[in-house]
Amino acid sequence: STWGLLVIKMQRITTYTAASCRISAPVPYCAAVTSGSLSHTHQQKRHWFKPQRTASSDGPWRTLKFELKPIRRDYQNVLVNADVRKLCSTAEELLCDVTVTKSRAFWEIFSKRTKASVHLLNPLDMAIILRAFDEHRQDTGIYVAVAAHLQSNTQVLQQKCNALALVTLIDIFSRRLKHSSTLMQKLVHETPNCMYQLAVSDLVQILHAAKRGGLEDTQLCRRVARKVMANVQELDAATVAGVASGFAAHKYRSKLLFDALMQRAGRLANKFEVPDIYRVLSGFRTVNVSCDPLIHALAPRITENSHLFGRDELSVLKEVLADSELPPEELRDAKAALETAINAQQLYTHTHTT
Image 1 (cartoon, one colour):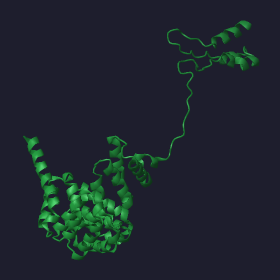
Image 2: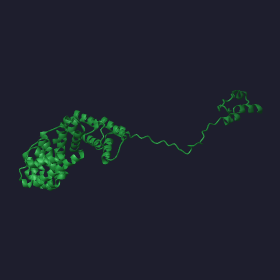
Image 3: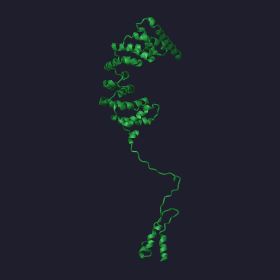
Image 4: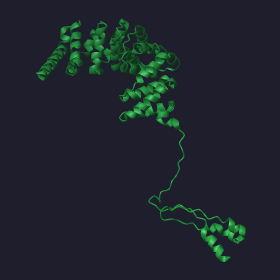
């Protein structure tokens, strides 16, 4: 009947309670269908009374739209997972701008990744990365790690080393490692293999770095002396002074070599700067080689710039002029200028200490 059909439909309507807001379960209607009280049309329309669950679009974030960005898979471009190319490019960026400031965490991650990848680096890559740490004055144990790898894998130097990497590594290790004579000896022994790529100024830097690292190598000095003799007429004043002081540091004495250096220095006497004057004269004095013609040529420069020398430099130059066999009248002005400068420095020290 019509009244029975209405009762069955009303029982299927969703009811909500104010306390729990739960959806009530539908009343079974199988009995009504079985008894024939529901027609076929009414059975097709029963979905009209099913609850519809929809989400509301109203809220404070309704204007925001979620966008799923693609996941990056280039893990090698992240410093913590960087490959050799990324490590070298990072070091080159740091060398291009040495004024940039990085956090301590950056240097630690850079160092840890370099240590983990040191077996993949060739000497040039090591030199670039270590130079970046050296220029920014960072020491996170990277120098010791690379030095230990080179000591245990000498074939890396023999197969892949070039001149630029060799000079850079020798210079950095001589200043950053306390006990580096063993490693320095291995690096210096690779110098003959790169001699054709090295300029005289590079060899001077190697001589001073080897001495700074606690190594005195006469055989290296002989090899360097041959190249210096072949290019002595092309040396500038600063290089001449560096060569003289470098050989003196190794106590290498060659009369033929120092005579050639003295002649070249005499021609460039007017181009010597104050530090170069001291270096060249102290070098000749250390190896006990007479350099009276050079002293005569540099005497005017010493007289003009006597006030620019330091205390130790003044004392050495005074001894050099005192040991010279030149006539006293030729060195009278230079000796007087040095004496005046020494007295002025003593007076200044006495005034500021009392």
